[in-house]
Amino acid sequence: MGNQQVWHRGGAVQLADRHADCAPTSLYVHIPFCKSRCFYCDFNTYVAPEETMERYAEALAAEFKLVSAEERGLLQTVFFGGGTPTLPPARLLSRMLQSLHAHFSLADDAEFTFESNPDSIDREKLQVLRDHGVNRISFGAQTFRDHLLMAIGRAHDVQAIGEAVRLAADVGFQHINIDLMFGLPDQTLEDVEHALAEVALLPVDHVSAYWLKVEEGTPFGRWRDMGQLSLPGEDAEADMYDLVRRTLLDQGFRHYEISNFAKDGGEARHNLVYWRNRPYLAAGAGAHGYVHGVRYENVRRIPDYLRHLEAGQRPVAESTLLDVGERAEDQMMLGLRLAEGVAEDAFEQRFGVPVEAVFGDVIRSLMANGLLERSGGAYRIPAPYWPVANAIFEKFVSVVQVN
Image (cartoon, rainbow, N blue to C red; front, top):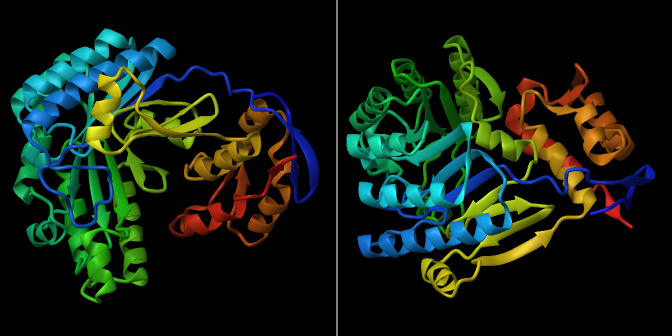
């Protein structure tokens, strides 16, 4: 997309997205199968028989062929998410990975991640992943109390978490992530402290720690509306977040994104693509991609997904071309999730104007209130305000309008 005149609160300015034609070097693959649905989950997931998984693997191979025919760049990151990507049997995992390599080329140092639940993995599956170049695995632990795991509908127990992580390390995974959640029903600060102590005993170099978000249409959403969900409350959640941050920093992790912590070299390179507002391909039912300024989403229902691929069609349900103003806003909102913030020179290199020329009023207002800081040529949210980051992001929405 060429230059566009953009109006903002300070007047008009010419923006141009100089990255619009950059070839995507990342791929997200959605595997929508789960043993059961957790009570908080609103992701695109299904409990399905193995026969459906077989047909899905065939359709995924067909989509890989169609996507790779349009975008032939060398992949630097690949991420299999879900759902539970390690739920299918080892032979199906092998088939999907063979299909991927048949249609895409990966860089020698590519980051290749698989999400997994502790109860869905074994040595055979881990070896299949390693044999096909997967070098990072992310386990959805969530908590280290059995009664809390039951309360949120998880299928594994605490013992399975440690066994899965140690087995992955034994098979050769050097990059292992643990997902934690806080703000769970009846969860206490001591429960979070216990989980962090357990993490310290495991060979992991990355931790993702998320607030529970109660979504409409989930069991938790219904129970909340009925007054039957006992949540800790905002003050307790803030204390939990502060405990997570302080403890993981003491354990040698760096807090590099609002919900993510990594030891040296353990940062999630694929997720950094999202936060730095760079393009990425997508495959699988309900998967989202962002290529050449277009955000797109695949059809969500598995029968629809299979039908499209059996007809030789890309299964895209909808796509939206973002104007250059929306891309600039995304650059701010996504980049401010990171400790590194939004670099002034990177913004100007991409959009052709200084960031202050577009968002000066918003930036000055936030800085006056201490909600934003400028350091080392970048704008950042001070760490104490990360828990309220969403309120800061909102200030960058609909600031600019394309003329």
